[in-house]
Length: 119
Length: 114
Image (cartoon, rainbow over the protein chains, first blue to last red):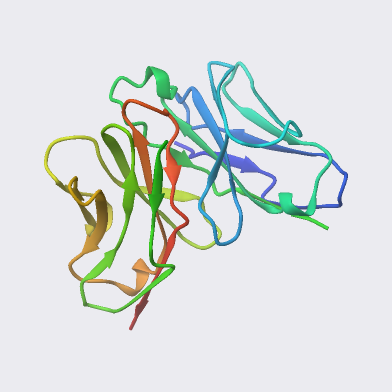
């Protein structure tokens, strides 16, 4: 089985532009989460989607948005890019959303990430 | 609120020696604890987790972690380090009774010298 796939792997944008990042979860996984990892920091939670609904949102501005499609793939959009948006954007999938994970401890499977550079 | 601290930015160890990567956490209730590893230009990979039960948790690649409730710690250990263990290690915590989203530490770079 394919793991979590993300595209593009690398991209360069200029300030003010918009970017769309894509993620395909592991087959059978219905939950997708997005994280931002700045160099030297741990992953920071941006969004979680489950069954096409937003189930969680981190402390990011409204320039960040996301959606999940019927096939459970997801897109992360960032508008009006700033230099500080330069980071590795990670997508993670899990079988169920956190609130429906009866085991109580979802293990996240991460993709390799999309490295965004804003000039 | 939940938080996790990894007090060491970098840990250096000689191949064959035991290694420890430290993690302490703070939650209101009981914790779910995780360790992930990140190799260069890769996403995070799950190593092990603690939910409940035995305080010593065994995971992938010979790693284990010990949950210590009184010290609010979840240190990652391995009896004999390999050069291939060199990577970035992240501890994460979730509060059972609180946020459903895990909080990650800032990571510890493990360097194993031949």
